[in-house]
Amino acid sequence: MIEQDSTTLRRYRRFAWITIAAVYFLILVGASVRASGAGMGCPDWPTCFGQWIPPTSEAQLPDNYQQIYAELGYADTRFNVLKTWTEYTNRLVGVSIGILIFLTALFSWFCRRHDPWIFRASVAAFFMVGFQGWLGARVVASNLQPGMITLHMLMALAIVAALLFALAQSRRGILAAQSIAGIDPRFEKWLYVVMGLALIQISMGTQVREMTDLISRSQGEELRSSWIEAMPWFFYVHRSFSAVVLFANLWLLALLVKSLGWQHSLTRFTTAMIVVTSLAVLSGATLGHLGMPALVQPTHLLAAALLFGFQFLIWMGYRHARSGGSSETGSSRPLPA
Image (cartoon, rainbow, N blue to C red; front, side):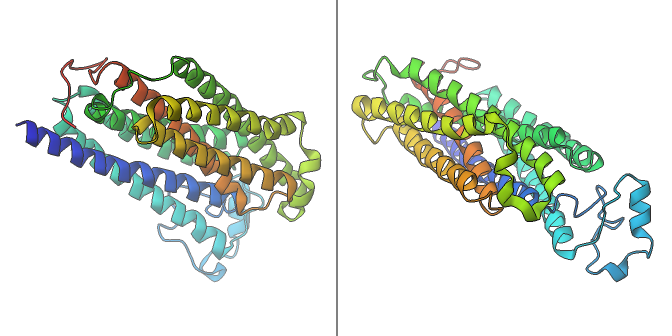
């Protein structure tokens, strides 16, 4: 039975990793859609120009389609085959991710006897995907209002958090096998400091992103190089604060390497966090100094989302390792790795 239980957990973890990677891919695709200006490539939802499969040329649309959509509140609607199919592909990817999360919830059913929170969090992620689909429709209906776009992005992070929580619960046995008895006593406090700094940085980043949307509407995509000049003061704070976040994370890694070594799971996850933090800083510097190139925006957003994910895993992993692998929310017996 123990071997069967162990196999069930391993299968769930593998599928959960695939699903989480797919969700991050969707975040990258969505950011690319926004950076390319293809967000309104389909001015309606769930159809696209009133069709389940979008047209490939303007000739396939009614002659007065612009008037039709102008009366619906989209005065600037103009068919662009590249933008239309970019947005449509984003929707197809979103549906595929929804199916993956549904299958993850099904897999989690067999893990509920180990820890009911694996099943609960996986099902919660599935229901959040349904809400995210509705929210996507509201984003289109709002004609890409910056606040709605930010809410849509935050909901994606909430889905990631639910999946990561379920994954972390399924890894308690692995963490139980790795002692943290010698961990530096400063680690826990510094971990919360690092998480707080990242939260501040991401919050400022959402404000910068909303301001970027507003500036792009007023100045147009062709004047990207002049967007920086129109940015408010918190853009410069956000840009400089990235160095504080990076060095704080480096110090966290140093504490782990010195006390636990390089092979511990916490050290490996923290190392990965340093990589994505460095990517976020580098892409942010590129945006700030090279005229906001469109191709770099998705990379910057993805790096910020990955930073959030790794910090969440480190926090959950530390909690489980500290409790010796016992569940703080479910069964108290150690789980098989």
